[in-house]
Amino acid sequence: MNFHVAAPIHNKEGNQRMQFSPSCQTDSAEQSETARLKIGGAARALAVVACVACLVACSSQPETADIQKDLAEAYACPVIELSDVKKADGAKADGKLYDVSFTHTVSVKGGAEAAAKLFSEWAYLEALVQPTQIALDKALFEADSRAAQGQLPGGRNADPEVRRLTQAKEQLASRLASLMPCETIEAVTRLQVMRSAAEEAAKSGQSQVAVPVAIKVRGTGRMGKAESGWHFADMPAFSTVEIVTASATYPRFKAEATASTSASSEARRLVGKVRAGNTDSCLEVPVSGDTKCYTLPSEPELATRIFGTCKDGDTCAITGQFDDKNEKLIQFSKAEKVAP
Image 1 (tube, helix red, strand yellow):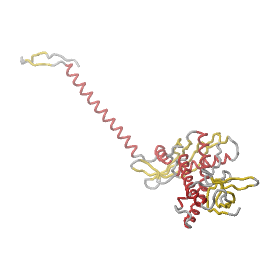
Image 2: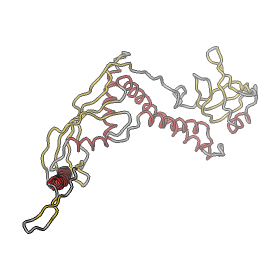
Image 3: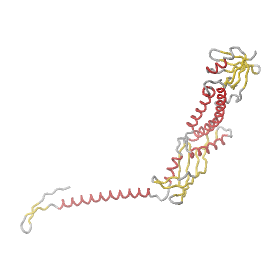
Image 4: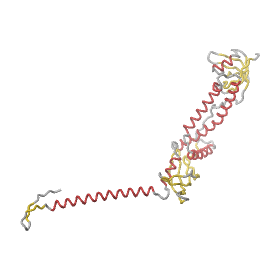
């Protein structure tokens, strides 16, 4: 801004007065105009923001972003990801509801190798659930029977087979939850569809199979307007459009003896000589010209019941479930001393 010195002038009456330079008057006018423009610009900006907010809040129909927001919650799981959400069509329904159709893709994170491991191990672990539960139920029933007869003072939970199978069941549940942590019905259903396709491909027996890595899905649903935006009023209906596959090695998991798979499910009565050692004891049984020495349980309660009847070198009949592969008595019922 330029400053000017006021100069004295005389009017026609001869009186002296002060007159300021026009430059100062011009600067004041410019400042006023600038301030007016700034205020006007700010007001227009606020008006634009308010208008946009109003349009968003007052949207008359759901858009792709609304659908994607709800689907992201439905497919919330660390082993999968949602992509390619697109609104295909829509029509106004009753009241404030709106019918929409849409497509989307659900993929397994990590690609083909990760998907192959997930589907193979998931199927394998699930196949163990029922046999483990059946074995546990049987062990509990037998433990309760022995407890009722006074043969198991500590009750069912003192039985070593009950404890073993209870632990096996808990470990199995933990492994399944860690491997496949999805909990929502939408995520689990999409993965089950892909797993079924993977298991079917694995029936070929080939090491390299076409493993599902993604599934393209079509959905239809009814959305309603709330303060937070558009949301599905009910669970949408889904149908598979395409299963995307990629070649990968399909792991083959070996069966475990979690539920006594290597043992006879029926109790047997084996007759042999008791061999009692300082640390381990066994029942020596002749088998086809050879001998097997089935390790006897070392738990104090069971050992007392066995060796209270049978001493080292005695010929005894022991009834229970025997694991032939690992040569051990895994479930004890009773011991009898017999004539040699």
